[in-house]
Amino acid sequence: MTKLWTLLVAGALSLALAVKPGEPLPDFLLLDPKGQPVTPATMPKPAVIVFWASWCTVCKAEFPRLHRVAEETGVPFYVISREPRDTREVVLEYMKAYPRFIPLLASDRDRPHEVAARFKVLGQPWTFVVDREGKVVALFAGRAGREALLDALLLAGADLP
Picture: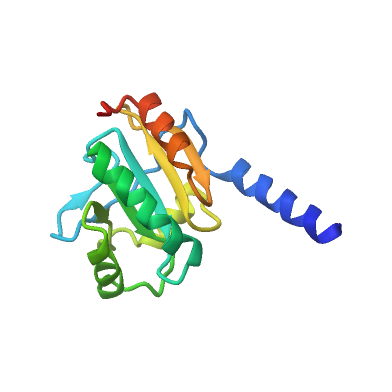
């Protein structure tokens, strides 16, 4: 019972620490695969930001579902590896299977894992849905259910088909 209680408290605490609905995105400057800078101000919105890691088994299971939502809705899905060992090459190779995702890579100013720390992300996958004003409207720690994600996108102002 103690182990379960510790996990529940840790999970609740991690959600309590993360960027919350209603809060603006933390500042960052990362690069898209073409080398163009991406910041919260330059991102088309509404948008989805997913923190992941190449070794994460839950991410591997979740990405096909998330990718289908990205394809169906046309909403930009930015993916940021929170694993410091995920090099540019590793990320780009992994993302070949998910062409609708926009991987964000290290810039001279910021590293992806540093951005994850600013979002106070403690695991992966963590999914943030962002509205037109750049505020978080929903976050999912772990798997994001399809219907909940679509509801969050509607809340963010997405024009869904």
